[in-house]
Amino acid sequence: MYNSVDGYKKFPKKLRWLSWHSLRLESLPSDMPLESLIALDLRYSSLKQLWKGPKLIRCLKFLNLSHSYQLRRTPDFSELPNLEQLILERCINLTEVDQSIGYLEGLTLLNLNGCTKLRRIPESICMLKLQETLDISGCCNLEYAAMDLPGKIADGIGMNQIVTSKHVLPWHPVQWSWLRKEKVCRRISPISFPASLVTLGLSDCNLADNAFLHVDLSKLNVLKDLNLSGNPIIYPPESIIHLSRLEKLSLTSCTRLKSISQLPNGVDTVDANDCISLEKVCGLPSSCGVLYINCANLIEMDPYFKLEPLENVNEEILRYLSLSNLEMIRNVAFRLRFDIETLYSNPMELPKFVQNDMTNIRCLPPKRLPAQGFYCNGVFSTFLLSEHMPSWFNTKLSEPFHSSFMVPVNHQICGLSFCFVYTCSESKEIVSEGFLLCISITNLSRIMNWKQDPLFI
Image (cartoon, rainbow, N blue to C red; front, side, top):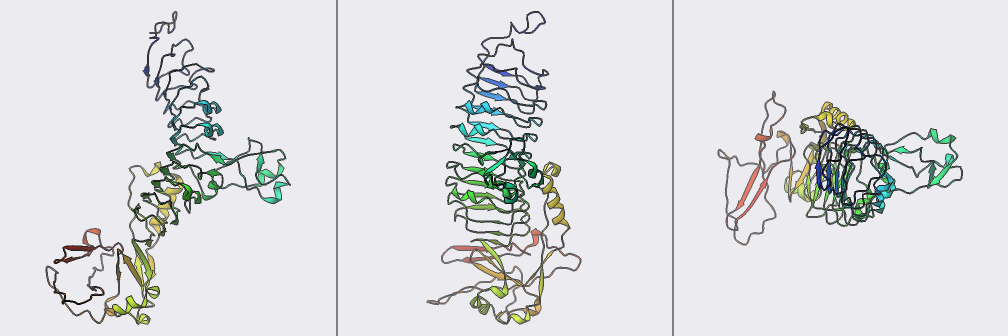
């Protein structure tokens, strides 16, 4: 199709779909007829720029330049009026997305995942009315214009102003000393996203809590899926409560996250796996499911379970268990130990702060706690040393460890109390999961079953 004399004159002029992976050109030739294209797939190309200047391709709806590692900036989009999907994933040297992207009225998907050198998201994306998916995960060097200048350097300019656009701040905390010499300022707004978004990916963006003072999520009224995984946040952004359509919140590997609370009523899934600092989950919708593998410090998930010092437990519960005299066990300390699993085939792909946090927690000694009470699914349990065995414990069962009894007619039962003893050999400090004890209870007359598995050893 190409020769040095005729160029691309024999290139098919009515071609609708062009897939040319690993293209070894720095830009597409100007004489290549692309006017009829609907889809252009140039993954893994050597392109430094797609083409020179604007290029009118009225029919183009799909453009994939992912893994084009030499690409520095996107083309001018003003002559691509019908583009619907733009994929720039892993364009690791991309530094700029052209402002003309705001003219793409039909754009529904923009994927910038892994564009690690991208500095800014163009403000013009707020003009997009139909965009449903925006993925900027892994864009760890994005900048925002700060709006909380210290008063001593604001110099009467106003706290919602900032220095010229060449001076911007990364999404993580920075020092302010360089601002003192600046004099020229302009008004700016927080970073906003198109209100039409249904899916927003912000994972591994190095977002700390202060970044959400400048990232506006509150107007995303139709957002259903929000991914904040792999960010050094301590708490989820407060603006999440305004996301009335939110269904899924991903917080995987937010290793500094302390608590999760006050989510919209429609949320049905929270993925908190590997949130190794997470301690408390509360105020979630009743139908919401939470994933919490490797949450090494989680001691409360309302209303499912809660770990609490025996001193704070309701006195009536302690009286039923003959544990009203807490002086006997007040000074007893227990070990709470977790083994952090490795869930990733290549941990080096995780953000650096996640790698460091995982390494640090593996080096920590087991947590020592006073005697604890554990609430789970309406059942209260505790662990005591053998010398503090309840006085009512006098029945010894033999293999296969089961017993049955008849409930007297018209007898009102307040509850059932069970006590069992187990030992662990001195050479084996950890009880493996396969040997955890559990209790199964069956009401034969009403065909009702309960099973209690301990979450804590």
